[in-house]
Each structure stands twice: as C-alpha cells, then as structure tokens.
Amino acid sequence: MVQEPARASALELIPEEVLAYVPGFTAAGAASAERLPGGTVNRSFRVQTGAGLFVARIHDEAAATLGADHEREAKLHAVAAAAGLAPALLHVDPHYRFMIMEHVPGPTWTQADMSQPDRLQQLGSTLRTLHSVAPPDVAPFEIGASIERLHGSLCAALPDEGAELSHFIDRARAALLLSDSARRPRVLVHNDLHHTNLMGTRSRLLLLDWEYAAVTDPVIDLACLLAYYPQAVPHASTLLEASGLSGHVSPAMLAAATWLSVLVSYFWYRVRRLAGAVSAQDLAAEQGLLARLSQPGWV
Image 1 (cartoon, one colour):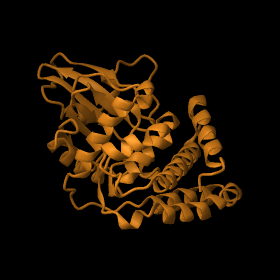
Image 2 (cartoon, rainbow, N blue to C red; image 1 turned 180 degrees about the horizontal axis):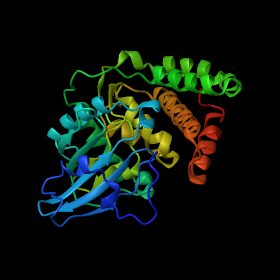
Image 3 (cartoon, rainbow, N blue to C red; image 1 turned 90 degrees about the horizontal axis):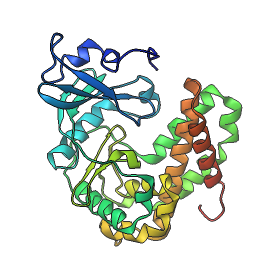
Image 4 (cartoon, rainbow, N blue to C red; image 1 turned 180 degrees about the vertical axis):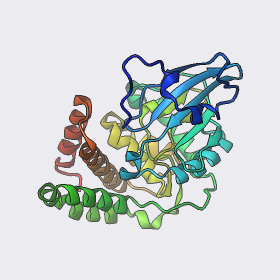
C-alpha cells in the first residue's frame, strides 16, 4: 500500500492524473480534499472544487488478490446508480486504477442500526429493489469458488496453515449444498453490506463502495450482513420478508449461507495479512470470525 507522508495535505496525496478528472479542478484554482474514513485497501477522498463536492477513490493492486474486480465493479455500480441506489459515477479510469463519483451528503449508518428492526426492514426493502435491477453481463461470481481461491492463496504462501484450515473446505461444500444456492436466479448483489457502506435517512438509502458487487445468489447479501453483524441474526426473518426472499430461502438455507460468508470474511482477513502488518482491530475481527466458524450447530 502507499505510504502516506506524515505532513502532506490530503490534496497532495491524490495523484495529478486523478485530480485531472475531478470536475472543476485546475492546478491554479482553489480546491481542498479530505481523506474519507473506511476502506481497508483502497483510499477515498472528498474533493471540493468550484464545481462542487466529489469523491475520488484510488485503487490498490492488493484488492485483486482479495477478490475485487474493478471492471465488474464499475459496470454494476453504474446500473445501481441508474436505479437510484448508488452515487453517480462520473469517470472510471480505463485501466480501473481509480474512479470519480458524485458526493452525496448524508449520515452513514452505525453498528447500532444493525440491531434495529425498522432499519433492517428498510435495508431489506432496498435489497429487494436492487435484486430486481437487470444486471449487465459481467464476470461470474460464486461464493464456493471464492472460498477455494482464498484458501488456495493461503496454501501457496503458508502450506502448513493452509492444510490446517482445509477442514473448513469440506464444511463449505456441505454448507453450499444446504444453502440450495444453485436453484435461485442470479441477480445484482452489493456483497459488502458494512454499516459504513450504507448512507441515508429513513426515507432514502444509498449503497456505497461496490468493489465486491457481483451477479450471484440474492441470499449472499443477507448472509454477508448477518456475517458482519451477529446482532442482526435475531431479525433474519424480517430481512427475508423485506427482501422478498422468504418464499425462496428457509432459515436453514440462510444459516448455511451465513456460515459461508463468515468463512469468506475469515479467509479474506487472513490472506490480507500476507501483504504485511495489519491493525490490532483487524486481528481481533479475524479471531472473532474464527470463533464463530467453530461454534457448533452451524453446518
């Protein structure tokens, strides 16, 4: 990742080739920037020029190792934006190194929102709309293949640890069958429903950061959410009903899909450590996910 100078202003941290595509930016004109919180791999900045407020996001090559596909992201973000579910994309670098989008003011959700039935109902309704959007033709995504790929990265770098974790692969295959994923139609999913990626009021909700968006089983969005937030698990039936999946996904199917999402998150954190040191917070999250994987009664 890029090592940021300790005293550099945020504007100085944005490459000139990126700033050139921010509306209203000129080298001689007044402009300012602020690093936005969130994001464990890429860097995002809010940039203000005479033309308004915009967001510039700069991609890190490490994201591809973790499963990101920025070409797929750009296509899916664009159709979500056209449906009013995401900020408008203003420019996408032809090599997918960065993108510029509109800045939409509003509060992001908090962890506390993830235990509120009315908020989860709103999110479920938003997902129902998202899953009805006709997706473009993009590279396929299947959670089972993602798990196998991440485990393969661990085996290649750390053979002993990879072998130690191989028992999870057998359980993942069983969970995939239990989830009955193959029978559901493939739809547009966000696939990273962290509270920092949810912004808006009780009347309108926008989904941010489409880096891991995909066309796949719709239950993946609910499973991702429950994997991130155990406090939302008691409200799983609310999410199933609001998202329109209650007639297609049983609680057992959702539990199996959630276990798979927990495993993806655990492998994601573990593979990310291969690139270097990570924060104590990330290490704690990784260990928490491992503890959940080992709980009885999942798969």
